[in-house]
Length: 436
Image (cartoon, rainbow, N blue to C red; front, side, top):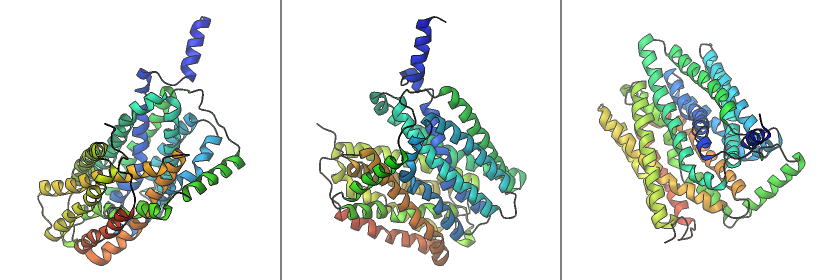
């Protein structure tokens, strides 16, 4: 090998990715980021429902799985201090693959609920740390202009992971259950497939991920801790911060409860107040049609904010995230058996959520703007996870007490806190609006 060739190879190992090389790792990296998240947040709910766990236990204990994402900003600085982001990504994918395998091994156990919950907790912690590493590596592995250009790509493949997780895998579980008559075996196979996929991803990323020169461990532990609390202190001192936190916690107050009970409602038998759908049908209606509608709603929301600005779109979006909850009131009282009608209703609610959630994301960006914007945005995402965790924990108990029909009526009433905080917050009329 000539000295010029050796230098070129060395340069390719330490420089940000060339445009052609970026496609080699961004799609797979963000697909791998989405899978463990959808597994612990949605797939676990459907699995436990199939295994006859009560709604109150499902909602309470799976909502706790949000906690690693709530506190993620507090330990993200420590990821910088040990090893490289590349090392963390590959290692965590191996760990996540092993944990998926461990879920499969614990499902047949007599105390499977407690055992699988423990593994899901470890999965959530690993997934949150993988998020930190992936997002950090994205900024290190790309030039600044590439970072902006590939935002849509990373979002698309994260959404594809959601489709795969709550669509294809749910359908697979239902099909295997019908084929074998053994629901535990069906879910063992699903998690076995996930285990093999993640181990394969780790092997692939060991080859595909670049080696940016800036991807190094750095930072003194004492200095990192002091810096974090300084940054957090500046966040708390922002103008109207209590109102900001109230908005972050209450904007999705109804949706946070609905999302935990929607799959059980679709799966529960008609005599229990549900719709009695098969697991496969839930994979199609909720996991696939719903996710596509959610994505369309999000794209429409982004386009309209770009045209009219966040302030002008805030109330339409607050209404969009709450008013479509009425479709679940209709479904619960009427209990229709037409799969197309059910699918349309779920799609309407999910499209409204996707549309309305855009305002929430843009508001976080607005609040985080200024000094330490990256760290302050991470703190906002912690409150975002907390806003799903706390209401979700009580949703199962409320549903069991009220029944599905009156629970969904309550979800509509739960829009009131959203409307109150929406009315109180202040938004710059120009924010989010594309310059003429």
